[in-house]
Image (cartoon, rainbow, N blue to C red; front, side):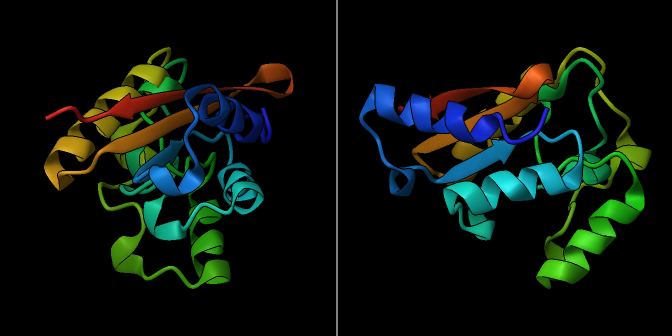
Length: 150
């Protein structure tokens, strides 16, 4: 867990010859809300490009399926509120689809949730590139780049 997504995102960008500015949206799965924010700060991801539909509190933590459902995920509802207050995120932009309490955690399907979400957001918003990323136990991370070819 931790900020493993940061080096994973850097690696996928390096392998594809792309830059952070080339990416339209990012989904960073988090075990805890501060983890996604640490990745955001480390990489300098603009907040308006990160976890567009909220985090795990908003969408639920997909236990075992985090890669399938990524946003600013949190273990406890108060975490999202603390982050919202600390960063001054307008409530109308935070966890738009509800939280983990509302949606539940997709055990074993996080990667799938993240992937499906990003593919739909690229199409819905008519964007070109998205990166999905997740932390893995032991400080590891994983990242995947999506391209809308339509």
